[in-house]
View 1 (cartoon, rainbow, N blue to C red):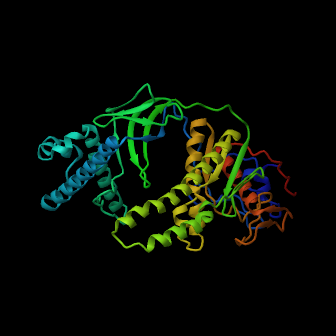
View 2 (cartoon, rainbow, N blue to C red):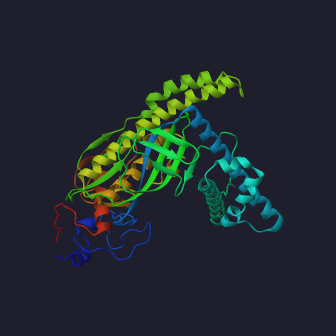
View 3 (cartoon, helix red, strand yellow):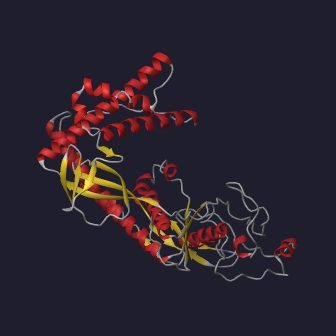
Length: 435
């Protein structure tokens, strides 16, 4: 019996659209339900949010980051370079503001870059910084202003770019030249010198930019942005849907569970203890300023562990599956719930999805994000929809009497909707509707 004949029957048992064997539906708008699927249980399909597989790029950009150990003399030059860039940033931002208030017109990027020779005569210390580093500061100011006007046009809270206080500038960039790698695994920076670097993995591709960064704990890093040809992994036929959560970090549609490590929760006592000691120190004193690094070290340790976990989890998924379907979550909006905000932030779903996207694109995997609406409330077998409070962890369908873990049921639905949006077939048996 054809699907159209089946839909004409009043008493037929309907299946989700991804099990009917029909072609892709007509054009949908964001949040629309499939209008041609209405069952006795009220099931009318998932809201669709199509995002097709990642584009196969012949060239990609990737960042390689290394720890560097400058000498005392080099450290002084690095700090001076940061302060000169900070002064120039504030000067350029102030000029833009003053010019607009006086003339009603702003300054462009190249108008400000053309003033650098005059500025170097007035402030001789600017000559100690590579010219392209100074040009990159002007680019940063220009990007900040463009983002400000974009937010104004969008009706958002614009947030005018702020002036940077002393010690608030933590990075500078060589956009084209002024840096090189030496044979003894050091990075040579113009007007700074050759700095020792921990070259723990080789750089693949053509180096485009070099950024020097100081962390909150006064550690120094160098980051190289490279353009390279990605290495595709061998194709695999496996498909997976991923449902993220708080009790379990992620549930895969094949039943695999990834436990939630709760890195921040485990460090809360240590963080509270060191913050209590920090609060007893008087504001503005050298002791409090020095002790601030102790607080930063705890946050840094948490961030390292969380980043290592998300990298390993995303790498295993990309290596094992050829088609990856995930939820298109608005994590920033979800953190407005004050009861779950800390747990959601600790779970780091955004970082996990970002790394999963990048690795999937590099490996040549098909990756799709789907609208997560009703994936937890709909039966993955028959399509029946029912309310599912957060404390109910087992999905018990009253129609087909299937009982599944709540997260596993959602992962199966995510996989089904993702495969349908990609135009791929779902590897599952299709039940025959009643006559």
